[in-house]
Image (cartoon, rainbow, N blue to C red; front, side, top):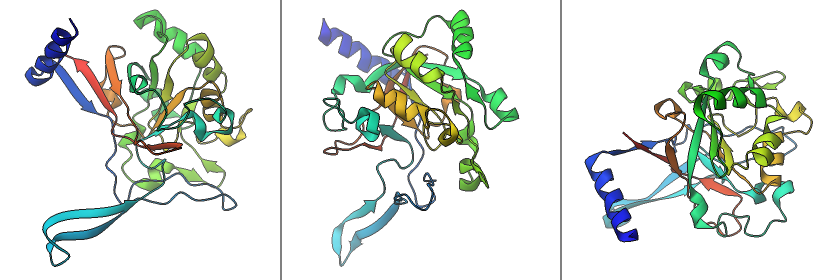
Length: 260
């Protein structure tokens, strides 16, 4: 039975009955990296260094060294990333059960609201209204906030940092426990450089998505793209991070599978 299911899946992929959407940013020197106040440690930007390219350094091969922080570009956040999730078992990128890297997605489209207000916050009320149209957010689902923020290709516009900090949409503090506890989601995903809103350092608690999601042993996805290509329900996300020992996260080639 399982062989038949896998064969059907392979045929559906090859025939185009299942469409694959890439939700990932390209990793390059200009990829935007989260900016923290000067008193905190800094994440490295992405850097690519050529080792050889069919030359005296290696006549038949091309390869590179690369360096970056774990949370660069489109990336996966593991529970160990935040102090609230540090004591869970199997909470790092090398120990999370691989079955958890496949899960359905619910896409909440608030792109119009965000176009009018870059500090827009998604609340439980928005989720309930969405559920009235599309059905309940099932346990084990990703909730993805579509804002079209990823269409800001300039790094300065994407980070949108003003004198009082970044102005980027995200979840309301009340939304995080609602999703984690009342809907038992697997995680939260957004198009911004991180999973929290730009002004989340002012919230109570600060950075509620990091604190609440990871404190509930849930995951995060940040810097997603192409959410406008996903249906409200029906997509399956494929989200395996690099298997970094004790890793708090990693850049991730996030893929969505959609049945056309």
